[in-house]
Image (cartoon, rainbow, N blue to C red):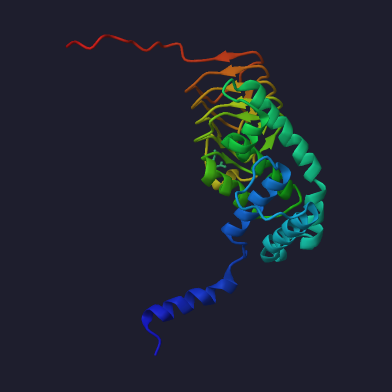
Length: 271
Ligand SMILES: CC(=O)OC[C@H](N)C(=O)O
């Protein structure tokens, strides 16, 4: 006779058919993204690398993507094969965008030694790369997988970029831990953000889904550490600088310098 535990586990197994979505596994999603990154940017080398030619690697990645898409098939508008074809067609454009991001980091961070270092090491670059890949999948109407990919990168970097955000070229996230970029954020060209920056919503309510809840950041803006910029109507005008720890829920004109005026006091400790 089945024990209560086995009965419970049987009930769980029976529920499988009642879920609206079937998802690929997180390890499969992670493996796909990391192998794709190695194909796009072959700057690192495994100690025990199995040498595969480019054609074989592409075939393997194509199969991996099809494997990720198959559980989602009832929720896809076309066949997984057609989705994969469209995704791989977009790869040269994704690569070109990512080179611009890497170049922006290498050119603007005095701590960066080379483009290769940025590509191999920088969490900001990795998070942007996964975001750009996920954003393309979202544009071809793939549900859920884009979010799985950006959350995989979030787990590795502490940088949370929603795949629905719109981010222009030459985007630079330095250090990155704690950065949050919400779903309806729009970011122009050549924007730089530091750790802890939140581009978020002023109100969080389910009724606001599909509405613009997150800010617009125009070209050439720099946002320093831990600044919080909230609201769908909030626009940071181009060429502005937002100082560390600023809390901003209103738009600012182009060329604004926004910072806290209050000074901290430093006194000697009486001994
Ligand atoms: C980044 C952020 O504001 O998140 C809050 C909520 N998840 C939303 O998307 O509105």
